[in-house]
Image (cartoon, rainbow over all chains, first blue to last red; front, top):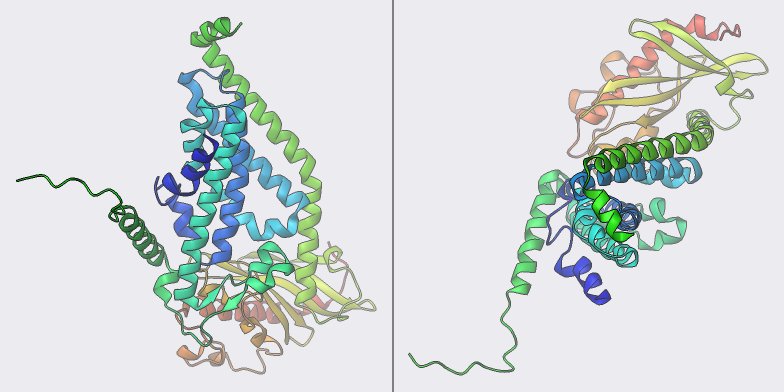
Length: 220
Length: 208
């Protein structure tokens, strides 16, 4: 059960690659690997909290009003996180500030509240939030890295702004003096990369199964 | 107990009450969070402003607290807040904002000038230009913005206050012309503003 939840979040039911949710933040922030990572981590934190809260009040909320209740809950949570980060972790807020406001419109959060947290126990919901969040983070970072590599020839540029000076080693210039492909940085690049990754995933999943047991030939 | 709750949950009044209670709790949480963080956020923003003010002036240029020494100067498009830099009481420079329309929205700059009208520093305070293209105007991403230092209306003729593509003196970026064009325009506008109100700003009277 636990393993299934993890596998679902990371691969089988991945927010971006399988559920095709949260495409707005996906297109908007994945212009670099660091941006994708920042948005992913911020979303993961909110997703875990919102799943926890939704699961703990699931018996009190009647089905008819559950959606407005979840919406109010998530919007409040994001606003409180936004204010708290701004006040106590102001340096981090300056990097993540843009992403946090965008989390409110991330339909994956409401999606998980509705599809999973409102029907499961608190620990399971927290695990689901973590798995979905990490899957989202992985997807955003991957798309960001591909766009960044093709668009500006670097990987994880400015990662130290996001993660601290200790992570400067991540910042690599793969192609020095690279003119850059503007298209990859602009929104169309996001659609192109996402489309190609989806095609690759389909091809991987549709690959012929290893022929351990070959089916008996049927006579025509 | 669980049965009772289940039956109660079906009632119409439960829905209204639970929704109302949720809204009440949410408002309370927001009010408390706002109250707890307001002062810290204001302090952090003042620190940020101070740090940016320090960036557009050379180290040791002023010996006063710029945040405490501001003045509103009337201008054609309203009025601007001007921070005065003093050394032993005399006004030796000024810092103020200037904006011009960029690719997506206004690009807001903070400009530091000395008493003679030469640029001491320019920094971008706010912009929503395309990441990876127009954001090279940020000091964290490119040194381009440093190219303004030392320039003044006297050192460059009016026609040279443009990007190279338009026959001016400033580089544009590959793939982005609108953004640097707007920044050059905003800097020029700031210098024009300073030239027009120079006496008023340098007067030094401690006006609030």
